Structure formats: C-alpha cells, structure tokens
Image (cartoon, rainbow, N blue to C red; front, side):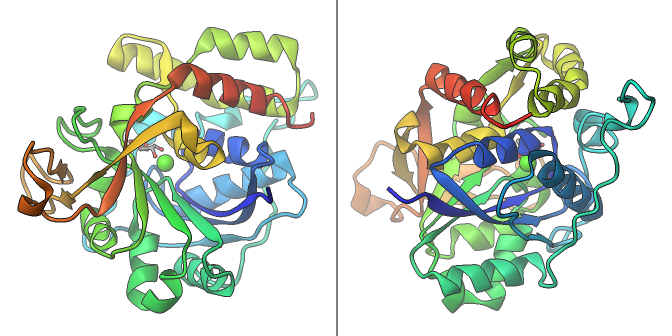
Amino acid sequence: MPPTRVIIDTDPGIDDALALILAFASPELSVEAITTVAGNVTVAQATRNACLLLELVDPRPRPPIASGATRPMTRPLRTAESYHGGDGLGELSRFRTEGGEPRYPEPQQRLAVQSAPALMAELISAAPGEIVLICIGPLTNLAMAIQAAPTEMAKVKGIVVMGGAIQAPGNITPGAEFNLYTDPEAAKLVFTSGLPITLVPLDVTQRVLLRAELIEAIVQHIGSCTTQFVRDTTERLFGVEQARAGCAAIPLHDPLAVGVVIDPSLVTRRPFYVEMETGEGPAQGMTIADRRQIKDEWKQPPNLQVCTEVDAGRFIALFLERICRLPA
Ligand code: BDR
Ligand code: CA
C-alpha cells in the first residue's frame, strides 16, 4: 500500500510537536506540507516551532511549511502559554549542550511563498481524492481555504480534526475544547461544509495518556535526539498536569489524530450531527451532538464521523515504538 499523503495543519504546541514526530516516523504516511495557525501560541511562534521540528527530524524530502492565520476569524486570539510554556514547546531555551550552546538553536528553514490556506487548496486540487488533511489546531486556516477555494477543497480525500467534546467535559471551559473554542466560527463553517470529516474529540484523546516513567525508560534505552527532545519538551508539562489534574500524565490529543490516519482500527467511529455553539456565554465553543435515541428521519443527517472509542494501550505502544525509530 502506498503511504497516505497528508497535510498537517498545526499550532505547535507540545502535543502538536509529538504528533509531527509520530507522523514523520510512520511509513504509512507521507507528509506533503505543514501549515501553521495561531492557537496555542502566535502564528509566528507556531511557524518557528514547526521549523525547529523539521530541522530536528530532518525528513527527506523536507515538506514545505506555510504560515497561516494570525488570529481567529472574528475574535481576538487567546493563546495557551501557561500550559505549553512561553515558547509553546515547554521552555526549550533552558537546555544547553555540554559546551554551553543552546541545545535547540534558532531554526533556519525557509517558508513556502503561499499562505497556509492557499497551499492547502493548491496541493489538494493537484491530487484529487488523495490528500488527507489533519487539523490539530484551531480551524481558521481550513475555514479560510473552504471559503476561498471551495471547488479545490472538495477534492480532499478526508479531514481529521482534533477537537470538541461530545460527552466528555471540556478542557478550556467546563464545556468546550481548546481548538474549537478558540475559533468557533471557523469550526461552524467547516462542520457545515459537507466535506468528509472525522472528529477526534476529548472523549478519546483524554484516554491516551503519556506517563513520565515511559519517557524516562525510552530515553535510557534509546538516546537519540528525538527521544531527548520528547523528554525536554514534555518535562515541564508533567508538572503542569500534576498541578492541574493531580496526575503526571500528558493526554496525547494531537498524536491520536495522526494515529487515526496511520491505523484507522485504533478507534471506533459513529456518525453524528454536530453543531457548534458560537454565542457568548458558558456554552461558547461547545460541540452539541445529536445523541437522541430517536429514529434517523427525525434528526438532521450526520455531518461528522465522531471517534467514540479508542484502543488506548495499542495507540500508546504504537506512539512509543515510532518515536524510537527516528535516527539519532
Ligand atoms: C488541543 O488544544 C491544544 O492545546 C492542543 O495542542 C490540542 O490540539 C487539545 O484540546
Ligand atoms: Ca494543537
């Protein structure tokens, strides 16, 4: 089977960085482009972080990186540095080589000339029915691409979105998940586009937990720069999760969205009609799924395939095995 061609739209972000590493370490995928969006950090920082990742992993060929939306469609940007660190990657400037140089120097990677939405539309239209878009940040770039180039975007093979909370509580508010809460207008436009979308919500991503002991064991065993990076970028976040949730474990939200494309059998999907709440107030950014136990003809037709179950053990094993594969 040839690898699945993917574009990853991202706001790195620690779990975004882990998702990119998983994608590059997986022969089932061919990463054709990385597009960046404002979310966890500003788009400038997200783009810099994507460049840093690419220089660390050094995939051949190197996919282009295109920078995208600087803020949500109609709202101001609210970033998440308290969770991901000031640089979005767990404060990497703390780490030095034995010679005292920064362990993670400023990346030099050049950017694509196109904006993120333009590059998405161009690549998808050039390979009809072949490209899967994996969106692991707010949906601003995707919404802009659908608005500007609906015919081109209709040629996408599929779209996998990490976001939303169907039965699970939210993570940024009691009811809403961060990516969709950040730009609910974009999410609404995407969910009503008629495109083939799989939603990977908190219901499943919060069940795939990375524990500090696992990382330590792997770094002891495989001392590559990738495993070292995984330890460095997650180190601070284990403390944040301990303080916040009482457990030193990191939910692998974004890596699971990549995992769903690597191995679709990791999750169970169910069709749902899902609507976005865009109004102000406590429900802002919530995903309202029609879970009523009534006959289909009494409901709106499903617009999303929602992941409802995950084989968490198998996914964590896949993730750990893959991060050990990348060369030192
Ligand atoms: C999502 O929010 C971000 O902070 C993470 O990178 C992930 O994409 C989880 O709600
Ligand atoms: Ca993200």
